Length: 294
Image 1 (tube, helix red, strand yellow):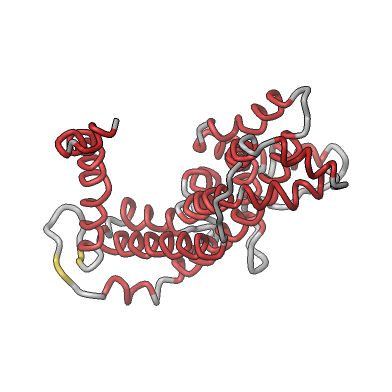
Image 2: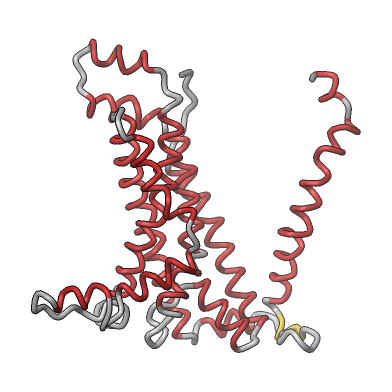
């Protein structure tokens, strides 16, 4: 192995496929998007450089304000709820013997299902005349307009979609935390029990400090996923009513593929990229991680 690592040609050969894939699939498209964000570009004619006009137009774009607010709401909601629920489920399932795999598979199952199909399913469930409202009518109750109520600063449809997203993706966080917890030596827990700790104290003083690197990783994945959130919300509301459930990804899609404003859509994409980088750097800075021998 040491001889192979000293062979520069072998290193280049092994790294070349990944490097080329990263360059042509990620790096070059990102650079093109940054360039197009300074242009008026409709996809048919050649892009025309217009400077910062696309970014100035964002200040007057009211639907973009809704999209930014909703994306930040999803960011905070996803990071907090998936952290708490993921840790809770991981802690509970780690401490049970019978039925662990069954419950783990049930909770993780929504993660592997199509978000488009789930969006349509939940759209029917929260339909005014079907699903939950139809069930409530059997008890003489009138259900709210789950996906159309526009009252409040954070409207009801956003809360509904946020909880559906939590249901779908909490299994991912749970699996990451369970993988990290399984690597902790049982001798540490046995020593804590001898010292008089109960399971909740052991979880607080042993488990949580030792899984902080995974907490930072999971929170970064949740943050990026919430900022580029698209398919579930698009299939449930398509950004309506009146753009009130728009997020940055859906607004980017509307501007680029519905109105053919590829330059303006690229500018939104650049803002989204910067937000992902800033949030990821912030999480890695705030969540202090240390390496321990386990």
